[in-house]
Length: 500
Image (tube, rainbow, N blue to C red; front, side, top):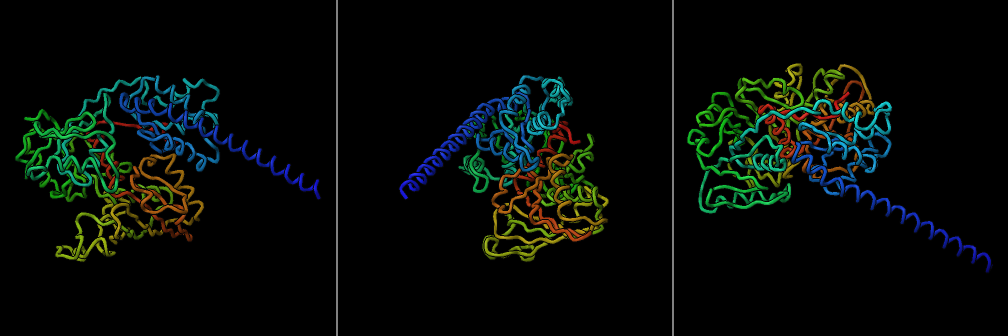
């Protein structure tokens, strides 16, 4: 029995040594990944600020990302490809890209590295030659686009998020220059309050940078940018040229004016040349869902709408399905977080049911998103109905698409198609895809996609399907607005490598 006990002891000790060795190996691997991520950060930052190059890994943004974010972005590649992409494999590409003369664009080093290493996309050519071929659209292109002055008319939820997005792209390559915001009021302490609301956000967290108030010049300084704060009760009372603002793009976040005639009031302001409405427009104003119908923005268009958050969330998915399967008809049910339009406690409201306490009730209401889809996708006109339920959450919503298709399919095929669409199509910047079984609404706060397909909830029965699409109705929508702003300003940021 003694020798047996000794043998058991030896086995246990050896097992412990093996475990320690494994732990040491894992720790060494983790430290290596951290070191690569730390070395990537300054390169990513310089590319973004100095050249306007936004670096991503399979759509995951790396600009201002932590080392952990960079590691997690690389880890996500295995979920899509079934093969790991190591940071030591993508790092040489990032270094090479930093030495190239490139115009602004969005570069996916994850896709470039994976194709180069595992798909033999280079066909034996050198790394420099491979990158020159894949990035040809922005290689050696002289950036001749002049910076455009931007004025945010209204500084609420969307206005402040647009400011954050513009201020994070701050440097020599900046083309959208936030010059001013226009608000009502002007009472004592108002300027500090506006700055404080930009500095701190209960949902999206603190501002990534420095914000100070310039009382003498009536403005806010944020990350080196001076933003003039103009107090006015109506656009015709403002002369932007007296602040050195000319040929400005006015982004109307108020929702007060909805059609072409009403929005034309902005042109009574000296220095204003174009207007973008961050709400659905009426009449002949083009309603743009970027990624779907931005080609409708013509140089002669002075007034454009970026549609609604829900329309932006569902239209890209609907376009993908219409192109692949065809849609006979369907219904869109929106489960939407409450908005500032509702009451905190029961009180009078001009709209039915919206007067009831938003934090305490599910509120059945209407939505025009389903019918608005046809403005971006005319082939779906009259095929969709819609309704909405406002729920007691402050942000992140969900659209449930119940559709009858023109041909039969199955759940696996549908999810595979949607995942490929989210990664390798012209809609890759609009559609995200999750296979998580644990994801909930708060996990999607800050998502930069118009919509996120929840594959675990997908239901398919022959030619019928039900899809669940999450969306950050504030931040995700704001990223779509920025894309429309760039287009109206003549600024192009191609996503490379191109979808094939």
